[in-house]
Image (cartoon, rainbow, N blue to C red; front, side):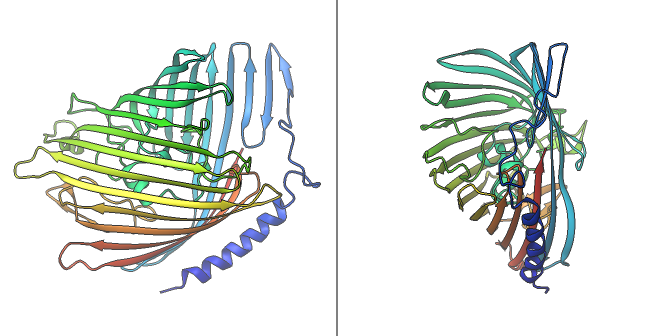
Amino acid sequence: MKNPIHIGMAVAATASLGFAAVHGEGGDKNGKEPPASILDNMFQGGGTVVTYKPGSGIAFEGDDYKIVLSGRLQAKWYFLNLENAPDTHSFRLRRARLNVGGWLWSEDTEFKLVSDLTTSPVILDGWVRQKIWGGESGYGGIRFGMGKFHSSRQFDTSSANLEFVQRSVATRTFSTARGTGLVLEGGLWNDAETESDKFHFYVGAVNNDLAAGSALSSRTRTNINNNELNWILGARVDPWGDMGDFGHTEGDLDHDGNFRGSFGANLMLGNDTVGELGGAGATDPDVEVFQVNLNGAVKSGNGIAAQAEVFIRTEDADIPGASDTDQFGWYVQGSYTTAPNSIQWGFGGRLSMVTLQDTGSLLAPVGLQSGQGGPLTGAAGGVPVGVEGDLLEATAGVSAYYHKHKLKTQLNYTFQTVDPDATGVADTDNHLLELMFTLSF
């Protein structure tokens, strides 16, 4: 077995020195931040103003529209050591995102289109949001299309704004699946001081299971053999000011002295059919899913941040002789980030676990890298069957933030232990070392 730590530290040291040499002085040679818009008002004509802000994209704005073009590159190196499989040592372009968003005719009509050139299909998000009401008492609107549907806090958070290279194994398993549907989103309890709402709610319907570890989670799936949709319901409370859902950022990089916290819950009621795995003309049985997500996050205002989530899931398959299956997952993470300077250093740790308590589940843990590293699954009769057992991951990370989350380097080491309950199946220990560079433009 190669020593992943020695290999990783050599690569990380070389990369970190290079990045620090380029970015160690912050925005310019004098250590100052770049101007808010280096191309501010670079073109004006016909009522159109074009501006550019590094990390936030190019904005085209007129009296009745605003369109923003932006993107992100995330390149990584990783060394994966699996106890029962060959080592993998490789580079990867993790994400290559292109985003178009804004509003048309009125700020009440928003839209977003997100593509990733490293995936197939390349379209990740495509939706329109229409505000129904808005005022001092709150707001409400309908979002229609494909995208994220509030299955967990960590998935709502953009992959550009995470403290670790990957989301936790619990999040990757019980969440991270986009869907197609409609959701009513709103906010109440407006705080005049922060000009934000303290209470936010969501209710809607989607086609597919929102758990990426589920066999029924394809975001482009239609209800080909089912006349029942999956329902979602959620809420979060931000007592000290809005921390955002899609706009949430992990870690406490601002050092603004303001304590903040956010606490929420999400519920999914799934009405799927196993027959949908077989395409058009396939037969049932029906599978009813009940999944709950509880989450919370706090920031001290002086560099300390913590967040945690719990997932509880029950599946009830309409199969003769089958019983309900229960699954459980959780993670907890914490970090400290140094005060803003030419480079902000971040240090964090995370524990996460997935527990499959019963056999016969459609859920399987999502592995360390490209679906590897979590062999808790088998197959029977063409239908995935979850094997009882536990999967635990412990991650430690160091991050260098040159311009907060918009330009950063992250080094993570993850230890994973897999403990199946199946007779004759041995425990396994796996290791993953990752180095990722993020640039938003």
